[in-house]
Length: 258
Image (cartoon, rainbow, N blue to C red; front, side):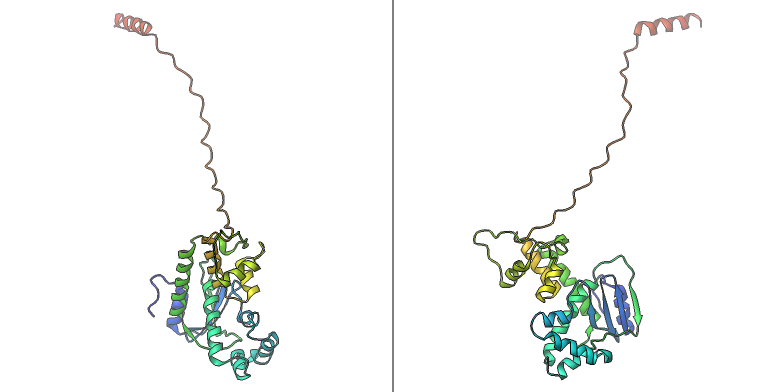
């Protein structure tokens, strides 16, 4: 596969080439593969598909719970939602694809921890529409670049969202107004995404746009650590000028004995 110039996850690239099936576990989430293609993703930083569907009002919570109870053991929850008439086929594909890209963005974030792969492990939701690993990597890179282009300081991504008063005549979109209305100075972007039933990446993007517009507080960078003071030096004692006449007398006396 022709991946991005520097792979986000070299192991994902290798597993795609191997057409592997299983779960790719990283510090910030998990990607599920079937024959080397991504079929599901989840991350603690991103709302799951259940939150996106139920909090967003598209599906009653009891409808989701029933689907998990009746079809989870068969890894066919998605299929059950369609066959039972709760979601249309195309609607499920769009919702699921959005959730996969959202969770994969965080699962593939830079990490210093180990990356592991468990062969043969599947997800209880089941396969909806597989996505190539190349597409997932490409979209992850695009999203990183988009965030940095809007506001290149990622400290706002994890800090509580604290609204600031708008300047006279300053406007914002309805989605951003709803986000600020829910912000209480304690909830982080991830918390707000779950509360509002929105993808976490899109919430981050709105928060960075608000930060660029001066409509949310931006965390202060840590204070620079001052350099240590130089080691104490011994005081330099003043040296008096030598007595030139004395030196001349010593020279003359030495020459007289030669």
